[in-house]
Image 1: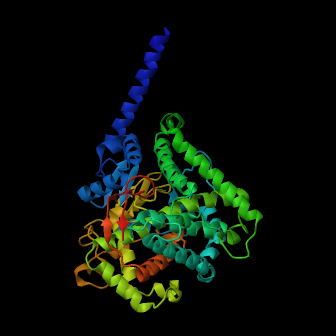
Image 2 (image 1 turned 45 degrees about the vertical axis):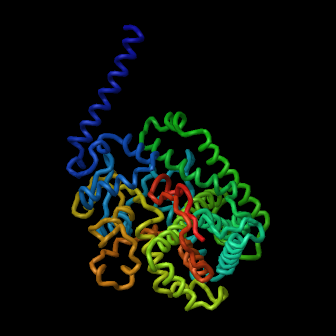
Image 3 (image 1 turned 90 degrees about the vertical axis):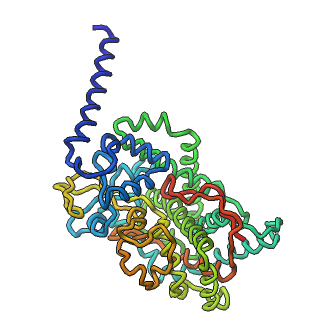
Length: 484
């Protein structure tokens, strides 16, 4: 038997094996009766394609619109959009055999093991949370509030200078790309809270190179997940298809994180920041891994929320005027604004909640693995080992849960009777259960929003911007969103 014949048998065997797997997934798999995409049911290849093209969230929403509260999105993967499913998957259980662990396929940082609260499995997560939670207690938030205020005040001054052609911004046209500036202030704030000093984005009116790399890192993570879904070919696919420039951004981000963290550790600060809490219980590798993810995930989601809040406020008639009136009526000066008082403003809170509903910072479902023995989720028996999730985008934009779900209505949170049948119970912008977000990012967003509405009355200059949910954890908006 010659080498060509041997090769032919091997190729034929490979093709036959995969055809049999495809047929099994389609006609014999325990999830075969769940509606959804038939091409996705055959192989992970389609889901990987949707991930790298940025169409995954949109396609999942379309399938829920077509088939209802539960859909099949992969050979062994289901997506839900009901309150029952959220509580079952993420609500938490006292017994360890009832825990829906994070799906390691979706929580991969390059090729090394993750050692941080974001990606850890339940046992390790409990330890990380016990160490990190004090940094976000009410008393700790009060301690870092001056840092938040200082950075936000600088942001407002920079916007004024940009408007008036002063300081570092000699061009006087009164127009700012608020999407870009939201990114500047959020990453400056996170850097100040993490390492004791800001990146300097606001001061210069441009992204720090590290920030530019961070968005590449998030894209890189999506590509890596797409490759790992196709095991055992993932290593080859990583080498062949993940661009070198993307790998470069990932590597530079890791290097910058290490250098900046090392500098902060070697130069202790008298002011409390997050490192003050973290270094007490985490080793050097865990510290690095935690800050590596904290800056990337926390910054992008918060900046997106701020930009989207201004986007919808200026696009919805009457909302901006009412917001400015409410904030200026409550606060006579910036010095009066604090987080505790800011949270009491009903319209501002309603606008932010409605923004997070219609434009969730994390639109994808957070993938979990069904415990051994299987579980019933929303009336459907799901075998152990299956992948399941419930996404904010699919739940909050569903007409099953909200009246006029794709229209911006802050009044739905203010007792308007048109929305009395809304299922607001599915609104979990920070997830739920013992793995919900413990960050203060939303508080910072509230404070920044307050000062902007007290100092500025925006109107639209141009909005060549795509707010669709494409790529990564969320969208890096395409184009600009200019306000004056």
